[in-house]
Image 1 (cartoon, helix red, strand yellow):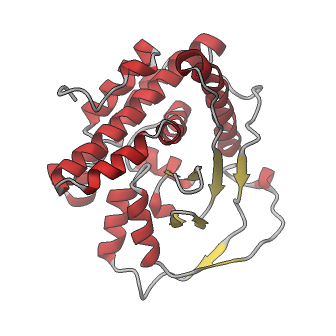
Image 2 (cartoon, helix red, strand yellow; image 1 turned 90 degrees about the horizontal axis):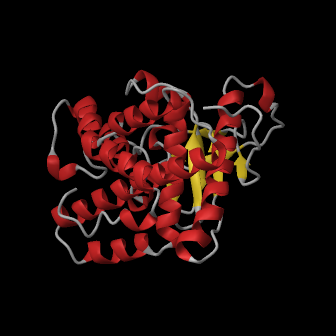
Image 3 (cartoon, protein in one colour; image 1 turned 135 degrees about the vertical axis):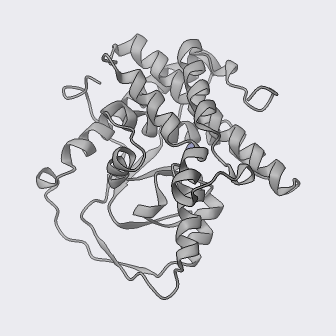
Length: 287
Ligand SMILES: [Zn+2]
């Protein structure tokens, strides 16, 4: 992705280096950590974040002056700020054009090790997520390394896709989809509720594709290989892969994000279409 010269978003709350010393131990069993990994990887269910928080030790903040430019993840942080700005530019245009209303930009929190959100405390093990409670996206940049080493998805556009996916959860919140899904899930069996979560996740992948579609049209920011990187990332973080990696076998009932193939397909669909209305993952039998 071509980005170095592009504008950075002003909606970034950079908490890196404001390290919370976090005592891990006692309260957190290995089971809870695996659960948190499974449920929260890559934009998990906020309720699960809450549960995780209740099992975590309290974080103590120590604020020190930070020289971000000296950090190893400085460039990656700048990249994420640029991508967030690209999502603002696309959705500030597409909301009025396609929905006849204005877009409200979310805040993105960059942190390392641990931080607090309205959905509970977050740690590196949490993975990127969106919290509807404060309408903020939380990303610990060490996830990028994990994306490459653990899931084999490399390239800067893989990270751009992650940001676009989390922004998509914000869009679902703005459009009241998240709230409706949460209400319906309460009246459903666990399996049915899980399927609703999958539909929500696949729609976020679709919306990430819609973003790439218009981003390319407006700015032409894609470089050779970028889409492959995004598609790879979508495939890499599919629940079947995550579960295989963490448990060694696949449990279909435990899926919350969709399979690699589904995630890739919905992302591509959004990319081809560019239309919000074609992303109704709730009204189709063909997920
Ligand atoms: Zn998600």
